[in-house]
Image (cartoon, rainbow, N blue to C red; front, side):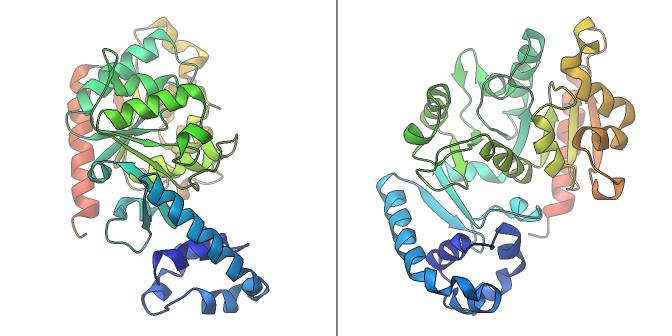
Amino acid sequence: MDLKNILILSMVKGVGPAFIKKNCHRFINDNSCEQLVRESKPEELDNLVDYAKTADEIISDCEANGIKMVSIIDTDYPSQLKEIGDPPSILFMKGNRSLINNTIAIIGTRNSTELGNNIAERLGGYFSRYFSICNGLVEGIDEHSIYQNGVVSSNVVGVISGGLCYNETCSSHHIQIINDVLEAGGLVVSEFLPYQKEDKYSGIRASRIQAGLSYGLILVQSKLDGGSKYTINTFSKLPRVLGVIHYPTSKEYDSEVFEANRIIVEEKISGIEKMIGAKTKKYIKISSIVPISKKEDYETLKTAILIQKQKQFSFI
């Protein structure tokens, strides 16, 4: 099945990423998506012609704007992203696609404090020497983790919550950061159609892609009910390494803005459970939690991520 037919299938009402992942084996022998739709959503058959026209328009938009489309069965689709329950059937990419194969996430609140920002900058400076840094490219911790002295690192992977015709789909501040990332040689990724505008829900969906792409994740600063819980929720279901800033020597660390950090460090899996609202620990598969209190802990976390990456993905 070619990319156009997978794109058409993704438009069928009632068909989502989890369904497409489950039926990927069909794409090897089926030349089109028609038979699969006939079996699963026959009421949608009459709409396939219109979906095909829309697919042609999307492909043209991508070609005109330098956007690469990668389907879930393509060899250059990131293997680590397939590990989540509902990986995007189509990824839209702009920039240096090679960066996507060695990624960790550095995340935290948009309403970050000076302490959080300083920590994010130090983390970004260190870990960008070994990994691509992935996050949503929004203000706060995300932004501070990718800029060093006002300049974006060259190996940033941004997962945005609007289409990759971002001048039309994203806020002005977000547009500037995206431009900086691309000009520095980075990569910007989205699952949304090129001209689809970001909204209050699309950021939640994009967070699962950040988690899926990342072999390790560092939580810098978050309230217990902060937006980082959405990324942590997906990441916690993967056997990967979680780093958590732990800064007990600072009075600020005892405040609400670091509540999620404290609870995860103190209660470990139970703390993650509280943050994401999981009903049972059996869904949490984190391989290890590494508190980060000092510079030496950076090396500990880096080693743990590399060991787990080798252990989990050496067969690919």
